Amino acid sequence: MANLSQKYAQALFDVAEQHGSLEGVKADFYEVTEAAASVGNFIEFMNNPKITREKRTAAVEAAFGQSDRLLLNLLRILSDKKHMSLLEEIYGEFLSLYDEAHNQARVTVESVYKLSAEELDQLGQVFIDKTGYEKLLITNEINEELIGGVRVLIGSKVYDGSLRNQLDNLRNNFKEHTNS
Image 1 (cartoon, rainbow, N blue to C red):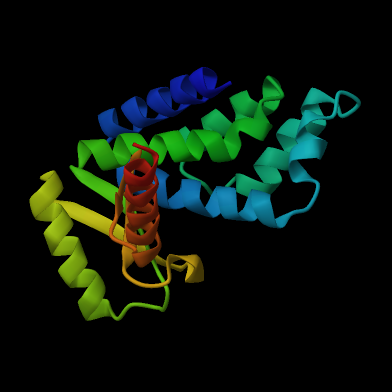
Image 2: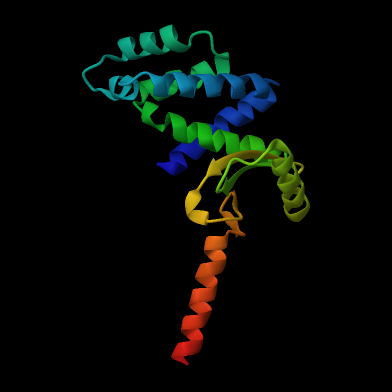
């Protein structure tokens, strides 16, 4: 279904860009996904074949009627086609398109302890220089299995400077030398 999510995201991105409402759509889309996730059975309700089209549309209007009209149109389509379960996936694809258009990337920095803003800024600058992005949106996650150091995830790339990785490499090199 990823392909379908990409198509929906691309269509919303293109039309929002054409209408100069990319920022508003992005902000509202975040709110919509948060709201949908916070309501326990929302997706199940929206995809339930026993719920009439009119009731699904009314639920979308009641919950998200204040959203940007372009986003609201997408929500109506998802409701009509019982594709509301793709909402988070579409949002992720939309963010990827937004990031690409703004030459920025979302980065996860894993460390044994919470890094300070200054440490994250320094790491960010290193990876801006390394990747060529203009901006990095950094999230710090605690991962005690690393033992020390950091692991940086940018898209599908992993930069692993953790002590755990160094020990694993050392062990593998040792095994190669003892087996040859």
